[in-house]
Image 1 (spheres, helix red, strand yellow):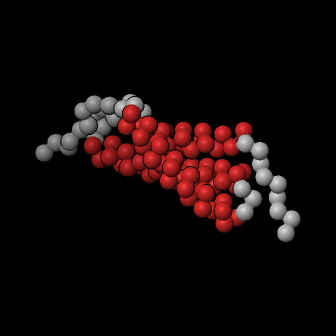
Image 2 (spheres, rainbow, N blue to C red):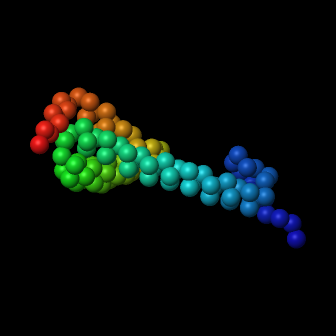
Image 3 (cartoon, rainbow, N blue to C red):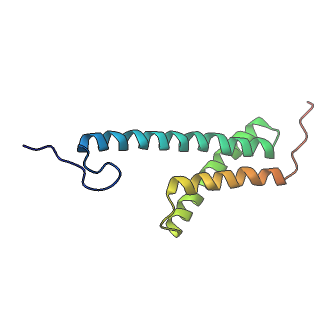
Length: 109
């Protein structure tokens, strides 16, 4: 019995198990970066928009959900755009837009 070989792509002619392991590891890396980006970008944007911690927490959650849906919609609208890129591009754009808004003064209470 011969081992199954991957037929096309960068791992052409490699045993299928090696290609599977590489794909599984790449998926974990992309997922980790997406998760980290969806934790950091909305939180950074929220803290630039308000000086109140609980309001920033609620705003961060709202921004993360909105950015996720906007990125998925953009990926759906442009079929060649990967969803992970669309989501992170949206999160980055929102964070960058917060630099155009005047930052609130810190509370002195």
